[in-house]
Image (cartoon, rainbow, N blue to C red):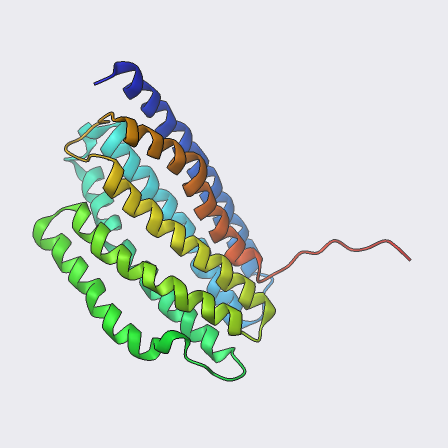
Length: 246
């Protein structure tokens, strides 16, 4: 184990946590403010979800880093319990958001096409999400729900993007495109942590591949995810500059 490597990883986590908290808070702030100006019910509901999910994701991200890496002594207390409870419902909430967005996108398709036969596919994927949830409750390991549930969520990215392409509403189309990007990055981030970060116990466990992944995740993947969530709301209310040209 390299002491300098562990210290470097610690500061990468700290900086990454600061970036995520800043971007998550910014996304939530703008989502709730934009919602007051929206009159379309579907738009208003979507930005409400974005704002709520941004707060939820920021809190979860903070607690996960704290109890696993920055202050592992808190893992066995109430803080660790809250973190596990929040992480437990993340796949279900994410998939529910994807499900409702795809169905809304279908209603906005002039031809009412069913992307990848989602009306049937969702009936297969929802039980798999609950199987992952049950597996976590039985085994109590993040890897179980991380692998099974996030692979299922990854499948939903394709109908999200197809629904976006077919939508007759240009604003909702852009919002769905950014939402699909956010979901894809969320899947990559969770599967990457399961694969490259050895969660053999509390505290930072240094490895070269883990260190490379931590840099990539904190300075690229997570910021892209929060930015995509922000743009998911921002796309529904374009704030174009007023041209002063005559």
